[in-house]
Image (tube, rainbow, N blue to C red; front, side, top):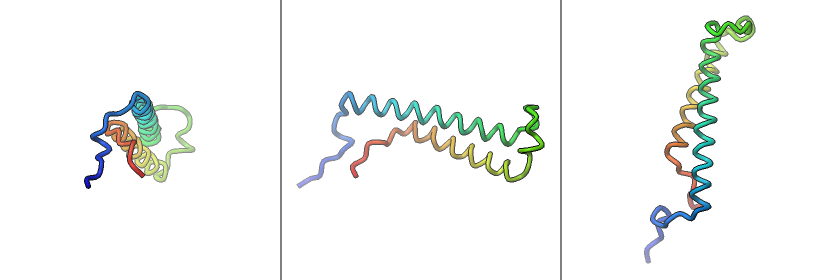
Length: 86
């Protein structure tokens, strides 16, 4: 007996639209997270008046984490590995 490979089966229209929607959401959220990280790291250059409140090393570390998470979300949207057998 051989097991079925879930990747070998063709996707239904519903599954294709689900993959497309999740991928677009991951691209968008990844971009927003990365933009927030860039904002937190380079807050002095944006001249928003928030420099005194958010310009400390912990916010720069948090900004770096936001950028990494944003890149992960974009990567996950690119790979589209959402449908797995549980």
